[in-house]
Amino acid sequence: MLTNPYAIYIWINVIFIASMSAVIFFGSHKFSSRVFAFTVLTIAIFTASTGYFLFNTDFISQVFGIKLVFFLGILSTTSLLYFIESFRRDGPAGKGLTSVLVIALIIIFYFTFYTSLITGYPISNKLSTVGIIWGWTYGGYSPIFYAFSVICYIASVVKLIRTHHEKTNKNEKHHVTMMLLGFLIGIISILIFNSILPGMKIFDYAWVGPSSGIIWVSIIGYSMVRYHQMNVRVITTEILMVCMMVLSFINIFVGEILGFNDRILIFIVFVALGAWIIRGALREAEQRALLKDMNVNLEKKVVDQTKEIRRSYEIERGAHLELEKIDEAKNQFIMITQHHLRTPITSIKWQLESLMNDTYGPLSPEVKKAMSDMGESVERLNHLINSLLSISALKSGIETLEKSSVNMRKIIDDTIVELHKEIERKRVTVIVSEDHQPWPILTIDQKRMQEVIFIIIENAVKYNVEKGNVMISGQANEKTFNLTVENTGQELSSEDKKKIFTELFYRSSQAQVAHPTGMGIGLSMAQAIVEAHRGTISIASRKQGGGVILTLSLPY
Image 1 (cartoon, rainbow, N blue to C red):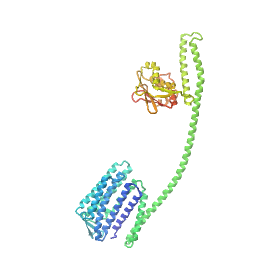
Image 2: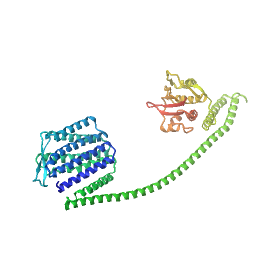
Image 3: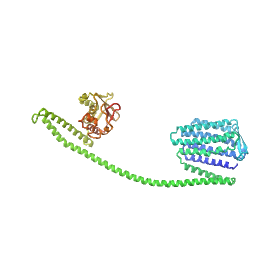
């Protein structure tokens, strides 16, 4: 075999491509990566067989060599198509494509090695510009062979383009673009230098097509490595190490054949590989030192942040405990104040009743009217004190609930009857939804829940428009009963919805205009009772028209 620079270049290509195949095969467990490694191996063998055929001097071995080149070429082509399909699927290709490719390879294998219908005979091209280089003749079925190759190339390109359109991630699109670029370089070089020019009896450049494999296989390999999140620098170093070992091994056997120039070329390759590895090792050492420094700094920052978080937690915990103490002191203050207010208010009430009954002598009608107004004011004040006392007692747990089995529907009906005068005055229509399923029996404090329902329905009527509607409905699921009261009255702002349950004596501006004498404590009272029953109460605006929707949820 001739050892001109072209032959050496081809063998360097073979070593590099074969090394890449081994590294990718053992470096990734993905199916598509393993298929790519096999494809690269077939390309390496194809390149080696091509170089052996082109620069060999033995005519007899060339007869088999040209057949081997043709078959390995079609094997590489079909392997590339299978790899691209497995890459698209991220798994094995479909059974249909696999069957077609296997059957085609079997047929081509038979016609290639057992007939002369695809390949003819090798011919010596002694007038070649690169020295003695072999060419070949074509068989009668060779156009079918090339047509099948072109179909595989086109199918591969189409599948890669479809894969590019299917990818949504920008990085993945970039990797597929790189694969498409490398594939096109390989197709164009092989078609030109191994198909078109040999068809014109020009064999001088037949070595270029296989030799281009180091370029386009590297591009596709790079995109595969990046796509599967493998370390490019590590992979490259591993490939170069394998190349060095193979070259060292070959040098043992070909040392006597290689000339001075060839030895210099091998020496340059070894120096380049060594420089690459040393540079990589130094950079890795720098990165390791940087990583160590980052770990030390990170650990220090974590310790500092942990101390800061612990300090903040202690401050927040102390503030929370302080707020609990303040809230408890507030509740105690309200209860004590209420107890002290009850006695004089009760005394005032008795004295007013005595005066109204003429116990101390007859009073004029004007005085009795004034006394009556005073009695109503005292009654409102007494109701306010009782409400505040109840809220504090329920929140602090002093007052316990007297629970019993109660039908909520009966409480609602009784409340509507009790409020009939206000309902008639506002000419409001109260509608209670009729459900075929009976309302569930709840375990609640009947007296307290009557207060809640009274407050809710009274507000729905009081803050409604003339001839408005109040819709009441109940719905039970596995663990909760939900009562919904909806009216067509005044709307509430988002600020009103936040404060109406959380701030005592809070009243919206619209409520103050509609009913100036209201105290703004009713819903707070209702919330305290509902929460004592482990329930919830919420309010929201209606989607269409004015009004609000109040939802009461109770467990049962």
